[in-house]
Every structure is written in C-alpha cells, then in structure tokens.
Picture 1 (cartoon, rainbow, N blue to C red):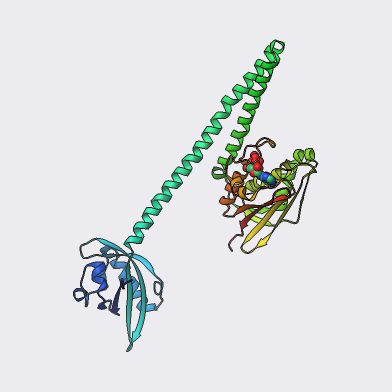
Picture 2 (spheres, rainbow, N blue to C red; picture 1 turned 180 degrees about the vertical axis):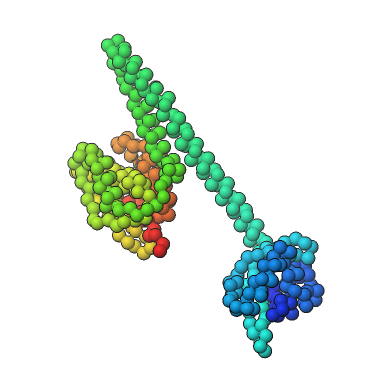
Length: 350
Ligand code: ADP
C-alpha cells in the first residue's frame, strides 16, 4: 500500500516548517502554500482557540496530554469541507528548539463504515425491542381470553354432566388439554420476554443460597421423582439473583425430568476459571446426541416431544440470561449416560 499518511512538522511558534505531498491529497492544499503558515490553517475555525491554548500549555508544562497516541479529529479541506482524520503527534528537540511532527491519516472511509454500522446496530436494537414488546403484549393479552375459554369449557362440562356421552367427554378433555398446553406456552413466553425487559441490576449473589431456593422451589419435583440434587460449595458471583434462580431452576428441573429408570441424580459445581466463574449442572439421565447440542438452546426446540412434557422454552431462557450476563452456555453429553450443562459468568472487573 503506498504511503497514505500526511506528515507535517511545526516549530515552537506553531508555524508549519515542513509537510509531505500527501497533505495535498487529503486537504487539497500544496505544501508550498502552507509552509510558514500557522497550524490553524488546517483546522476548522471552532477549534482554533482550543488549539492555541493546548499549544501554550504544552510549551509551559511539557505534559504530553495528546502526544504519542492516535486521536480522532476533523481537519479543514481547502474547499471548506471538513475531513475526519486520525492524528498522531510527537514533539522533539533539536538545537535547543522544540518541534512538533504530526502524522495525519484520512479516516473518511472508516468513519462512513462506522456510521453505517451504528445505524445498523440502532436498527437492530429497535427491532429487538419491538419484538420483545410484541412477544410480551401478545403473551400477556392472550392469557385473558384463554382463561375465558378454559373456564367456559369446564363450566359446560359441569352443567351438561350426565348428558355427555363418552365421546363428548373425551373431546372436552382434549380441548382442556390444549388450552392448558397453550397456557403453559404463554407463561413461558412471558418469562422469556421478561429476561430482557425486567432484568435487575447486578449485585453479589451467593450461588449456594440460590441453589437452596431452587431446591425448595423444586421440592415437589424432587420428591415425586425420588431424585437427589447435590452440590459442591458454590461461589458468589456478580449477577441478577432472580435470573440465577431461573437459570439453576430450569437446568436442574431438566436434569430431574429427562431420565428413565432409576431415580435422577443432579450434581451442581462452580469454580473460578480464568476471568470467569464456571458452573456445571450434571445429570445421569438420557443424554443428548452431539448433533443436537446447539439445537436444544433454540426456542421451541424439543427432542423428546411425546415422552416428556415441556414447552421447549426453558433452555432458551437460560441462554438469554447467560447472554445478558455476558457469559457462555453449552452442553456436553453422552447419550444414555447423562448430560453436563456448563455455563460461565464473568468475574467482575476490579
Ligand atoms: P423443555 O424442557 O420444556 O422441553 P428446554 O428448552 O428446557 O425445554 O429443553 C429443550 C430440549 O432439550 C428438551 O425438550 C430435551 O429434549 C432436551 N434437554 C434439555 N435438558 C436435558 C437434559 N438434562 N437431558 C437430556 N435432554 C435434555
């Protein structure tokens, strides 16, 4: 790549004593027109005062506030437009005099690219927010009519009582089942949409205490399955406590649910690993085939639709929670032997 950086040298009075040919490419002025001129000729009017003040301060204190590292500013093109540039400035001495050399790079293209990227990100954030709101409103507003439907079907069943034959009773049963399934989906969708909208600020969270809460919440599931949830000592992390409860609860409930035969065992561990905390929720259940290891974190994706109840939202909630905490979540599994769900929570930067 040919030299594309302009080089300009000024003396301690702030007058330009040297420049290279690239200056003309970037700012439209040939060197011979600016040598001998003050540096301010290269700057938009509004920066002149700040430049003079900074220049005087440097000569008085020699404190290199803007020296040595690239800074972004705008330069003035001869035609009056402004050019975004990156300036790297150094001062040096020779024969008892102070000189300044600046390297100037045209960053118009980079700035344009950044602007496009910022636009796209704004757009994405807007779309995401709209989608979140949509999910919330739809799931929230669907609850009411659904309650009406299920209430009325049940009322009908009670009223008609003996008049119903076997077939009609079955059909009512299906209808109620369908409504209940829809209610479960809607409740889970609401939980999913709230991860983004109702998150609490992060604070120290004792994960041992979180696990105790989760075990008490899952009391019925543990008792019913004759299962056991054990753990090593868990650390305190910087997180949203409510979401840590949700996370453990989904992973542990899955560990208790997805097994066949003997009573389920779930073991939870957590330890420091580099700049994050690494947790594992391990079970001895049915496991997950490697090709589905990513798939299961996608909303509505379920591998065992008939055998086990569920909505397919739990793990996508886990992933959203972990994303909000800037961690990672993944699963390692041996089908038939069990699964380990791993996740990380970054340590708080000191
Ligand atoms: P749900 O449990 O409601 O079906 P999840 O999002 O929690 O939804 O899980 C998605 C799917 O991933 C489950 O349907 C199941 O097929 C699989 N899965 C999740 N956890 C486990 C586990 N511990 N062992 C085996 N399969 C699992």
